[in-house]
Amino acid sequence: MPPIKIRKRTETGGVRSFVIRATAILAALVVTAAFIALLGKNPIDVYASMVTGALGNPHRLRETIIRAVPLVVTSLGIAIAFKMKFWNIGADGQIIMGAFGASYFALNCPNLPQPLLLLVMAAAGMVAGGLWAFIPAFFKARFGTNETLFTLMMNYVAQKWVTYLQYGPWKDPKAIGFPKIPNFVDNAILPKVFGVHIGWIIALILVAVVHVFMKRTKRGYEIAVVGESVDTARYAGMNVRGIILSALFASGALCGLAGMIQASAVSNTLAVDISGGAGYTAIITTWLAQLSAPAIVIVSFLFAVLVQGGSYIQTAFQIPQAAAQILQGMILFFVLGSEFFVNYRVAFGRTVAPSESEVPEEFKVPAAYDEPASPEAVKTTKGGSRG
Image (cartoon, rainbow, N blue to C red; front, top):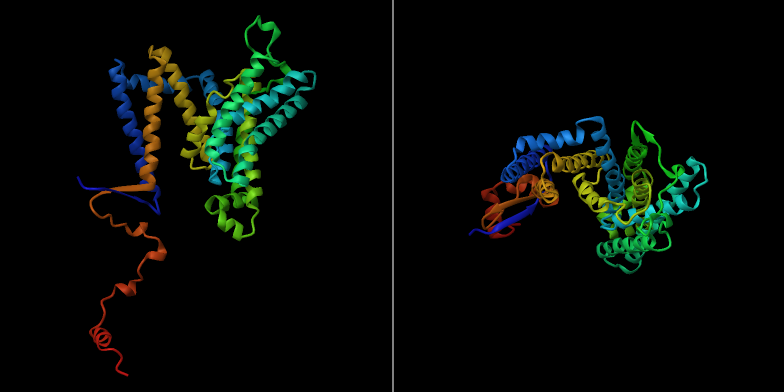
């Protein structure tokens, strides 16, 4: 069997990327169609129902937007950390802690005017989420700890903290023994615009803010430089430790704001499952969007369509939840797998000659070197200098 060679592409054309991704989507539809047929259902009907279930009427569209909002806000936060090559896997915990910070004021200051209370809740959520991300950032900057494991473990600490509150000091005495935190008063609930909580407007504003921050500001440029090379950033006189800490605080603050939105507008209370897994899902949407804030909106909305449509076909076709999740997972598998072929090429054989576009400029041979040497030059080389 000939060896398999994998080579990273230095340049990827837009047409090639589009063809690879389109092929992956078509392959996903074909494979999932076979799985649907094994369930005894018509694949075309199921696909049509997934779209109808997510976008078929105003109510379903609103539900899809509600699912997309936390993905957008959380993905923006993750994108800031990922741009710096800081692998923030703790967004789920930051969402939970953001919801906790907001809930503290919602439960203890119910008599504040609604605008003031919501602003305080948002600020508290951002501070709580930012501090939760600041902890692993500090240890990374100071001691070089592994941020992937650190942020992941922080998720479980946040979950257990809310569980303790739910069963202990914040337990609702009116819940007749059920471990539940009291619901928020009306003043602590975000208002609606066009039938959807105002979080969707906040998300769109944040997209513009993060895009400008990352592309047009000095700090955004510094974050990108640190992500490319810490040594280069230090050589340029940048405060690497300060950049890491501030960027991660901003990342966690956005995730915490997502938690505040979920607690205030969706759950109307604090619960251990407040994030709904958005912190993990947002890692996928951020990666698929290539860390681009505008693309995050599109990818998050499409993912919300996939999730909402998957929920709808469970009832419409009596498909088990596990089967619907398999469908979603298979589609994601192909879409994520296409990114490998966008960035790498695979060849079979003993040698893999790089294409012209894949050879860096500094390694390309000048055209003059490719010209054959003249007979006089060869004689001079063999006989030495005649002077």
